[in-house]
Length: 62
Picture 1 (cartoon, rainbow, N blue to C red):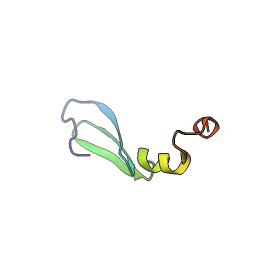
Picture 2: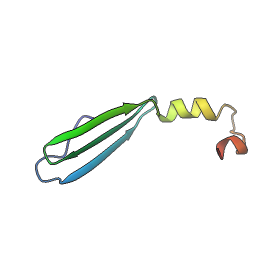
Picture 3: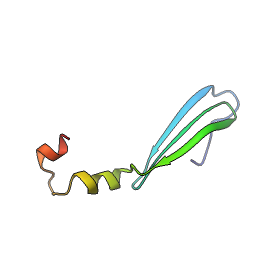
């Protein structure tokens, strides 16, 4: 997370999905209250669950 929204933003939930991880940031106004990173990025999940190219329909529906 590079930027928080500032003084009068109110309650915020920021979700950033990258290739290898997903960041969740929760906060109010000036400072984030909680920031966590999970190993659930788009690239990581694609490699884990969609191993064929093109994806097999039953694997994509999981």
